[in-house]
Image (tube, rainbow, N blue to C red):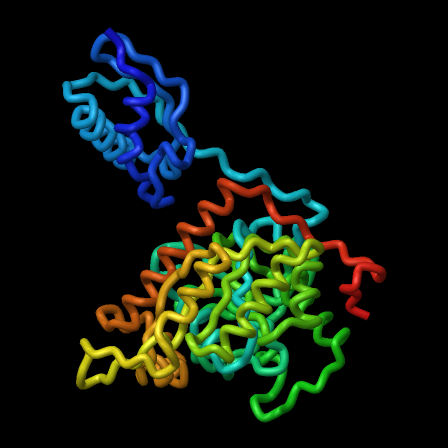
Length: 374
């Protein structure tokens, strides 16, 4: 006696890969299925092949196969790690020791993009990841304030015979910003080429070391800085920040369109809705949808993108940013929980992107394709 492969796959379709949050059949992680009598053997790929995770996956497969097949089965599962996406060509990779480069963008200003970026960076660092953050908002750098390092000055360090800038570290995040190199009351008045050169230096002349995630806090809109970014480094993916109201959604749609342009072609990992609802401190269970309800959720669905989270409009988020201590550090508060859940979704979407898509290539922009930076 042997079991039908369709029945085996049906049983395994109830087993969810814990990191990727989809079932192992949908993700095509099961292969080479064999069965004889009550013995079933197959190959299974998982994101984390550590012993405790293997045991959990074997138990889940056994449980659901016994249930669907209506008998007790004996399993022989060969578990291996999901192959990682190949490294990008060296000539296209300015940051060879950075695993994932994530652009955080918004179509318009005032939607809390920098606040979201700062809290995402700290949330990832809290989870044990090595995180870097570049404040690429050349004309309005705010990260030194949000990380309470306004008075810090990055110092040069000698690395392999080169003099590099040593990023400032705060809350476990390595940070560089043009704000470190200008007085807080000094306006930065640069033409496009000067701004893009300054941004390029933050990538190419800094000692970032090994990082799991590099977050790039982009200026609002679409312009020279965005083009300079995709010309300088191979961006793993982009996250779009918006508030729910229609005027913000119009610009969020433009930001999605920019990354989807054929000559840019950076995957959009998902969207995060900031100021999704207002929760008064004295009524923590109440939600008031001041800017509209679930506007970004609808836009995400229209573009077949995941909604990575909804961040409430809470006074302490603004106060935390002004005090230089990101709100995600408040641990048990509703806002900290929202940022932590957002970080978990980002990790999931980055893993899926790296498994399902080829590595992004650095953009080579010519003067005849309509995207010249001159």
